[in-house]
Length: 313
Image (cartoon, rainbow, N blue to C red; front, side, top):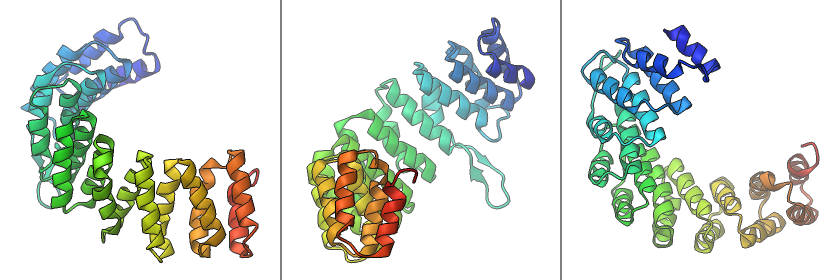
């Protein structure tokens, strides 16, 4: 049956594709169910009832990696299937499996995907379960909970994220995701909170905060980033700030970066040139950068400019 599923991927328009997928979903072998569910999602087949039945069977069956259940939930989420039973069961599912050390929970990804699924179908209890998931023992589940809160677009989701940022998390990736999420949900009221994280001792949190501010493309966020650059003497600490300013794409942001090329220390200028490299097809910016570099005498800056902006680089 694995070979048949592989053939379907190469020939998705086979007349009996749906029937083969349905037969595979009924298999007792979780890996076959996993492959079938993934393929059903890729082909956008209307087999949600069969996937839900397979999911319920695997909840008490042999699915040691949780791969089958996770693939089903992912495909149902991506298809926008109205299957609240799957998402409600999946967001609470914990599956401890043996490892070389202590048992590990292999269902963290499943719980996170089901959080996204509840948001997509606008389930009335979505916020309840996702808030609980933000305190999940597994970092992967907490990260996806933050992502689901952003996906919800709800004002109350921003309050949950704000509290989580203040409380903190033992895994910096979780806070990084919360910073990204809150700037998507409530950028105007969250700039100061996110900017406060630019001084966090953890590098990942600092970089996440900078990027979240830059991606918001708000003038106030640019000003917060600029202020931190002006008060940060360490060129390496300036690197993510410079990149975030470039990502904002604001005209005043580009003007500011050009002034840094003219006046900042050489290492900071190297970071600016690297950050602006992605815009090297913008002829106006190319000219401004070239004019600023011409005012510098350092060979390293000249080489970096040539490597980043010259044709064929």
